[in-house]
Image (tube, rainbow, N blue to C red):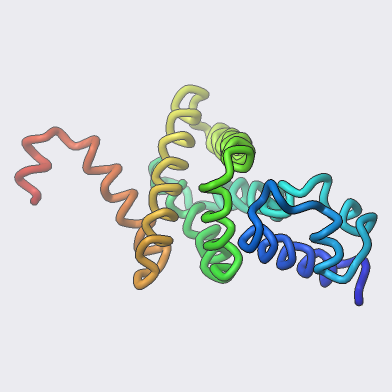
Length: 194
């Protein structure tokens, strides 16, 4: 059994997910996760600082990818179009990892300590997106507002995708951003377009 490296990390994530689903997050220990993964507890802590972080593995990579996607979005796009471009990039990763993403979301939804951690992680990611928008030349206030609003639309799309997996996450994402745009159209114009 591998004790270090990417395979051990993958096995630890899978073991944690299984145990959290079987017993619940609060009733599962890092030692039990390590044992299920076939490694010792020390190996667990080489990969993760605590048992919560197993479910948030990859957040630093997501942050980097989102900032890069915002920076590399074509010139001339409006801020929400830049965000849609960036979120489409991260949507691919979520779709490719649905077997982990979906149960992960369900575990977080029923665990207050994990919901709190998720909110902190989302704030960290939103701040990174806002910084990337600032680096594109958008002002501080608008960058913050666009990032927070765009992140809310992204989260709305992910939840819709979890509820309705028959359509791709990209489809749900585009719908959420279309709805977001519709909210900014004066009501008379929005009714005329319907």
